[in-house]
Length: 437
Image 1 (cartoon, rainbow, N blue to C red):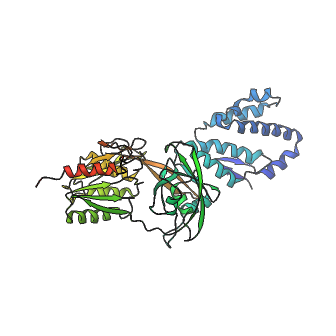
Image 2 (tube, helix red, strand yellow):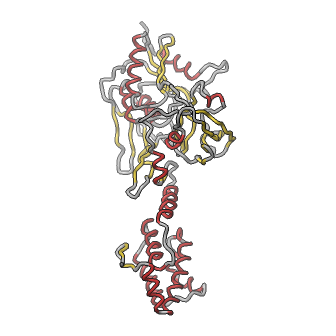
Image 3 (cartoon, rainbow, N blue to C red):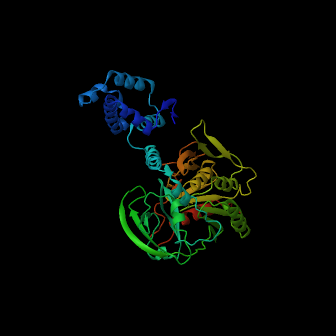
C-alpha cells in the first residue's frame, strides 16, 4: 500500500525494488542515486549541501541524468531545510523510498534525540528513553527506602554531594561536600541528574552499594581524584530544620526548601521569639534549593510587600511573585547566611530578602543555579528535560551563573580555632540590630 509523507506519495521499499528490477537501466540509475544519498548523509551537518552539487557528484564518476539533475535541483529549491524535522524527514523519505535497508526507528529516535538535546548547549537538557524515564519517575512515596546518608543536588546537569549526614557511613569513609558521582555498582552515572541518582540509591535497608566518587578542585572542574566506597543503606532521620538560641539571637538552619519549609520556619521563628530571641539568623548554607513557592512563602514571613522574585521565560516579559502581605515577622531584625553551595530556590530566598532591604546577607557568593528545569512526557514514550526559565532577583538581576553576593563577605567559613566564623559573624550582626531597651 502506498503511503503519504510530508505531502508526497511514496512507494514502500519492497514494491519500489520490484519495479526497479523490471528495467535494468532504471536500476542502474537508482543505484547512482543511492550512492549519492550516502554521500548526502555523510554531509548531513553541512545542511545537505551535496544534494544540489550534481557537478561534484558527477566528478566522482557517478553520472547524473538530466532527469535526476532536474529532480534534485527542484527538491533543493522547494525545501529550505530550516528545521531539524525537515532535514531528518528528507533523509527518511529518501531511505524509505530507495534504500535496500530499513530504518531502526527506536535506535534512530534514541540517538537523534539524545544528540538533539545536547546540541542546545543546555547542561540540563536530557532525553530520557522510556526505560530511563521510568527510573527517573520511580515512585518512592509508598514505602520507606534507605539511603547512604548523603544529600544530592544538581550542578550543570550532574549530581553532586550537597551535604553529608553527620555520623553516617559515607562521612566515615571520606565522602565530602562537592564530590561528584562517577558510577553506581559499576554503571556509569557521571551524567546523571540528582533525581536519577537518588532513585538509584533508594534501596532496602541493609543493601550494599558500590559508589565511585570524583573529587574535583572546584564544581566546574571536569576531572579529579577518584575513590570508591562500599556503603550499607539505612534509613537516616535527619531533621530538615534545626534551631539554636545564642545570646538573644535565634538561629534557624534550613537544609532544603521542602514542601513544608515555610511552615517549619514560621513555627521555629515564633518559638525562638517566645524564648527571648530579639533577632533571627536564617542559615541557608549548603541548601540546594527546592520549591520556589515555599521560598516565596518564607520570604513573605519577613517581607510585608514588594516583589520577591522575577521569572524570565521565553515568551515575553518576566513574570513576578510578590509578598503575600501581613508578614508576621516584618519588624524582627534578620540576617541571612549563604555559601557557595547555596543554590536555586535558596538563592531566590536570599535575594528576595536582600533586594527588599529586609536582611543583610553574610558569607560567600552563592552557587548561581538560577534556572528552572521542566520534564515533559513524550507521546511516543520517554520524556525530555530542558531549561524553561531563569530566576531573576526582585531588581531584575540574573542569578544563574552569577549567584548572590553577600554584603558582608566571610570566606571559607571556618576560623583558625575551628569555630564557624560565617555563622558567628551573622550572629554578631543580628545582635547589633536588636533595638536597645
